Image 1 (cartoon, rainbow, N blue to C red):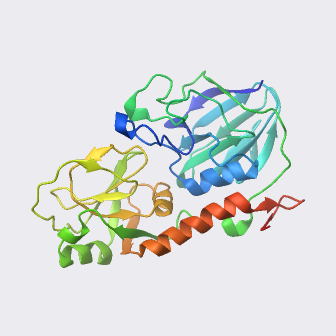
Image 2: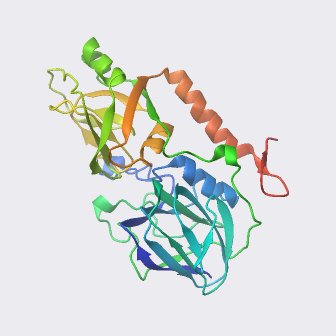
Image 3: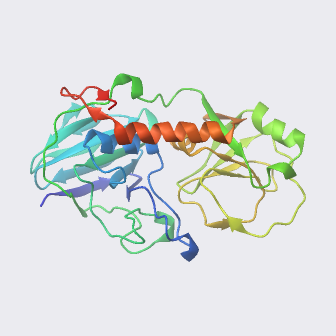
Length: 316
């Protein structure tokens, strides 16, 4: 058995898989990896099942020691990855032996890194998920702590692989989020909908896994009384001050603010890698187009295989 002995967790380190799909009726957040792109690639590099749990590290400051042999892959935010004090590349696999140390420094762009291990990390299971949701404070499912041992499912050493350059994200590129009309969309005036899509918004300091508060031109809020209803990933709530809030993985399960639309899931992944003062723009999109993008995304990771040199993927 091989473990990763955690030395430092930085601002926050959690264990995340695809999320808890069977607990919202109990008031449990879905949780799961905030950036699906980086999460899927971390597992793809190791040929893991798509939902294998990864460590999600916020803003670096992470360090740990391997107690035995294991293969890891590190993706996500651009920053310094070191193994035994020597700088190593992100977005590729690395073999660790007992006593090897790994560390992540504060990123220069992006916020989140994902550390995968061959077969996935093991942890406490609740409602068919190992996802940790810090705000809920559940025993063993809040956050990774210094001194904790995280068990690897496999001691196998994977071949060296790296993500092709064309698939590497640019966390400094202009951010335009696709929005699916829905919920109370028709209750918002034409001017309100135009405001959302024609004026820039800025990410505030109030961001976490629950949601992102934005600031910009106020959106006219319809005068209506709503019963609380289920909240989808990416829902854009507009409270009384007219400043939109994009709800993310650890969102509340129910809410009563009017919602002008829903940000596409893959765009939520792009949003969660951006920090305060980043400019954000919205555009309404056709549901069919958003669905097609997601289908292609999932099919790519499910059906492609690595070529022999580990530098490209092949469609069957």
